Image 1 (tube, helix red, strand yellow):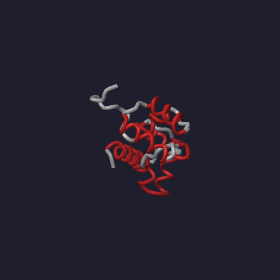
Image 2 (cartoon, rainbow, N blue to C red; image 1 turned 90 degrees about the vertical axis):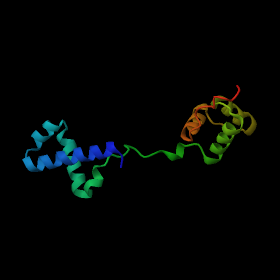
Image 3 (cartoon, rainbow, N blue to C red; image 1 turned 120 degrees about the vertical axis):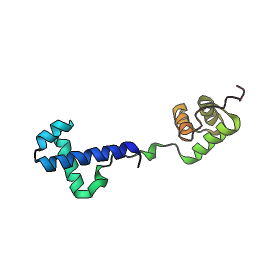
Image 4 (tube, rainbow, N blue to C red; image 1 turned 135 degrees about the vertical axis):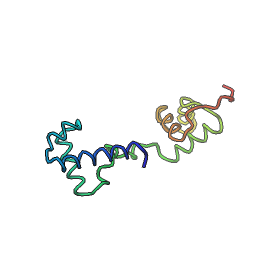
Amino acid sequence: MSPQPLHDLRRKLRILNHAKESGNVSQTCCDFGTSREIFYRRKRAYEKDGEAALINSKPCPQNLKCRTPPHIEEKILHLRRTYHLGQRRIHWYLLHYHGIKVSSGAVSYVLKRHGLNRLPRNVRK
């Protein structure tokens, strides 16, 4: 576990333990700068699932159905690695030679996800 989630977990446990020891939830929330609603939500989660419930998670799941299909991603990556084309030229090439409609922004996201968002410096324009 990386340092930040571990730090957050320890802080949440410290708040819960302080409230348990002092018996005053309102004062504990005031001292730690959290709302009572959040405190009780964390307390219920901790009682139900233990420490695993206090680990921060993404607020929403990844929306994979909107992601560019793998066969198009392969073509984008091939064009980038072989011909060193930019995102707009890849967009244009796929549209004119393969009939694939993919936005230049989607091309950019694919390249960024695979670590190819920067062109090599030694390649001629």
